Image 1 (cartoon, rainbow, N blue to C red):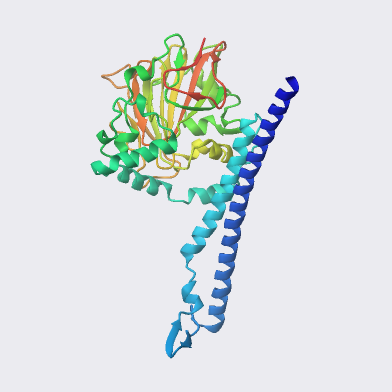
Image 2: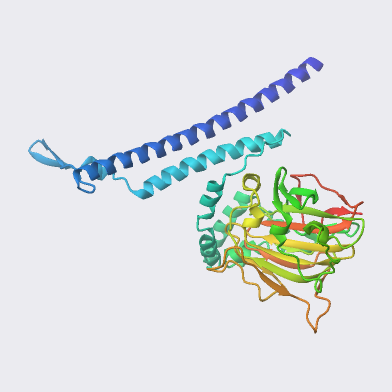
Length: 430
């Protein structure tokens, strides 16, 4: 019986290896085919361009050929007209080849993660980041936002939403309104509310998840650097921006030798912690208050709208510092507390419910600029009080939430990197 069980286990493992190998081979061959097509297309383009320059005629076509068949004259178009090369073809072939290659690379990384093997970090070079940032993602995101506002015919709503549900694994049983015909456009569908009992808020722990998503990283902030994923960091000061005035936040008096991280810690014996939550397109798009705290300041950083999925976060250093983001800062019972909503491709719209003056993804902005707004005034000395689990804001599609907060040294996270989490579940406690 033991031998039979071992044979069955070995066969199952062997079958998994065969399936994985075939999938990798299929992706690799597809990538190679697209890449070779792009090379051949580019080579053909250069050859023809060279011939045209030599003859002094731009895109000169050879004469058409004439054949006779039973006294009928047949004309064939020149080969150059049948297979006329255009820049669009070059872009499609090159882009397709690169996309296929990246898909193959992402697939390999997913397989390594599933097996528990540490994925090696391979950061993008400066020219790759510059090339990615040159893509008009802000314009595309605004176009996507306008498309989302278009009201769909009633007969088209169910097929469109059903395709989205099937693609991203959306659980409509949790939605407050399950009838797909109720949502007039994609924007309403993305921002759908949940049933009250779908996300119970954990009262036993001091900090809860503000949204549904996947835990990318968490832990203590060290040396003024925060990990967006394991092994890839970004600067704490670049992410939050310069220190806010002591009148708005209860910073202790900064001495010349104090680092930016030390200036954020307001109480002796406390440490600075962080947690990064990635919201996929199929996740619930609203985010809530993770604890009882007071929001005193908002800082809006206009910027790029690059993808923030885990593969890109592992590839581009300081990705969250490049992207547009809204930083809410304030304090809770243990000191400094901040929640940052990071924008992404097709997620130019970041909405904070109590902040009507916030406008994200504007057509023009100054590189490296930011806009400050204080919720503390002569008439309001307390700022905006938020209760744990209270509605705070929403994205237009999936994106990322980053929490950076101060807590005593005995604060413990109840998480594992890569795990799925839902709004209301515990992040950590004392």
